[in-house]
Image (cartoon, rainbow, N blue to C red; front, side, top):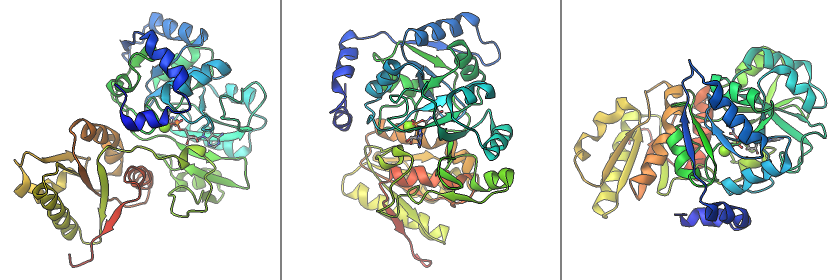
Length: 385
Ligand code: TXA
Ligand code: MG
């Protein structure tokens, strides 16, 4: 069943998707063991890709929805399957560095250094594209984002499928990116023929996107590879695109995907911040109590260390608390965030309150996703509560 908000996204693309749904395609899930990848599974996935079909696969960041990046009809299918706006370009995934030069006009020295340092890994780099990459893959842009993922299943799959896999995150547009094969199945069952199940992803949020097509180097989307890491490897200053956190209303994002509402849970999510953590937790508990009194179901997203502050609410049937990882360990939060947002959707909560995180290192990427999921709703608790 399609949910209302999903139907909204399908307005322009509903035709192709409807056909797919009528076909009622059977979606097969193949469990892949990283240590013992079976040749016949890679062949099966590769031959589907070569026929212009879609195959979902694990990467170290999130699951991708793959198609042959050099086949325009295959790329178009991705937009239809996701309900994705057609101006939002796809990242091309490769499995060896030599593949890069066949699809982009030139590779600056600083990009080479980044590739050496971080590929395979959670880094996407944007360059001017060669004509061999169809406009359908790049959402009409003259540039292309390229990434070599650090996951044995992804690398084998890309190799077995011709070397160039266009892949966005394998979620329906507007839903949290999938970090488990079961998330992909939730969104893509009946729509794609095959999901390669590599278990839980390692990182949990999407790659850092770096642009080489403007002046200097700029980050279009923060991720696990931070500004500081990029500056250190390139020896050059790195800008962060002003649209990244969407705080300046005039800023036009250079990554078109950043302008769309993303990662939205069904419940209204608010981030509660403040310098005094005790005061923040006390305020969250108070807000939650009030919501419960109003007959609402209330969710709380906090690191495990804060659980004790909500003991009073434990056992209340309308109260749902989710573990976001560990205090001071933003990578653990990155890994759990999208799963927790999906779980809240299933549990039909009405409001969610989340703690905020420091915006440095991986914390910047975590907060970038969390702020978007919250639709920029943030409450600041004064120092004294
Ligand atoms: O970690 C990842 O990057 C995952 C996995 C599957 O590799 N992929 C992913 O793709 O997050 P997607 O489509 O969900 O997000 C791609 C983002 C979008 O915001 C898009 O606008 C931007 O990358 N992008 C792609 N090509 C671009 C280009 N040529 N110029 C600027 N932005 C680009
Ligand atoms: Mg995405």
